[in-house]
Figure 1 (tube, rainbow, N blue to C red):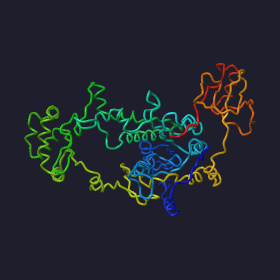
Figure 2 (figure 1 turned 90 degrees about the vertical axis):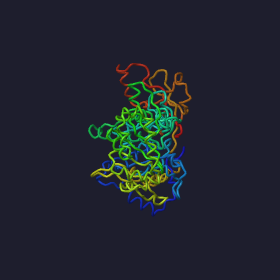
Figure 3 (figure 1 turned 135 degrees about the vertical axis):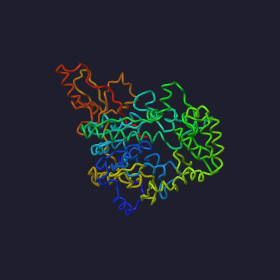
Length: 517
């Protein structure tokens, strides 16, 4: 059996670790609203990590559980990579304020269950049903911690013909219609420049978790939350989706333009592009005055927005001839006090050198355990009294494994060393046979491949971990099966006439020891 826990794969020095421990994610001020809330983060890539990062910014203790020797796949999504590290800057973007521990889910179920007992929230983004193989699904874990808030983030949700498909942002954007309405009017569908469907799903999930916390505070009740990329994307069609549902009108691509407002798009200037939005007739009149063409706003073809939409092509041609005469800088000086929204299309260099972006202080520098000082974009939301901040850099793989097991779970050095080197002592898997008389349960030392088994013909009911005190030969036992909670009690009720009769086992288990991916 593979080891459950793996040593930290890091070149971190003792001095650096000590420095980071001083500003660890547990160093939370009373003004952090999620102080004292612990989150088990079993997510990878963007949607899930983005959700848990927001919770971490608000003060939650985020324990990122990663696959040994591999970790979050996005750690390898480069170049660029962080200096003196194998981690990508992609991973850097959504994993601050977290601890990283390495646990093999296949062999480390007992460790995970110990962590669940100490946690308030679990967030995962595995394909539906995957974690049931490791007894880490909601139904299993709510028996261990009834107040647990369990959030699943998937591609398509737990039901429907696509439920078991893996999902990425670009696929959900394709299936959910976003790419079909994105791109130039006469061109091919385009992908949005960042993973907006992932990000929106993470935002929805984080909001749902906060609502579940409020509900738990009022009732003590835990909750299962299902969020998925496709549902998020369909919901995010917003007015475009509403238009189709209520008029039957198919959407089209508009480039930077707006279907229902004119002018509301980017115009080429002598130095780049400038985006202008006039949402009212008075704003359009102001635009024409500042462009030194006031007569255009009085033209009957352009008097109202309805007129401008009907005569879009001629108006945009006319305005384009004016905008190209000056640079972005010149136009922004002219539009300095304009009553309508306007702004240049900036490159990333221009974004981060923009005086307003600098003034809002959204870029933060923090110390990474391997790379030294790194920059991240901090939380975009400000509060008047509570804190929402960047405290620690994204962790190296397994950086906090020992610390979490010792301080949170109380594991001894000896136990941790044993888990790392050998894993838990192996146990035998036994086949549970249903005797003809239905009176007693038989155990054999045979192992069973539950997935390849013909469940309709087999007499097997489930898989049971053999008790250490049990003999090696086949025998009989009144022991309760681990996958049939309440079996003994149900048998008693059946004998008393309360049951429906027949076998009181539910049939073969769906659990197997598949690998995690």
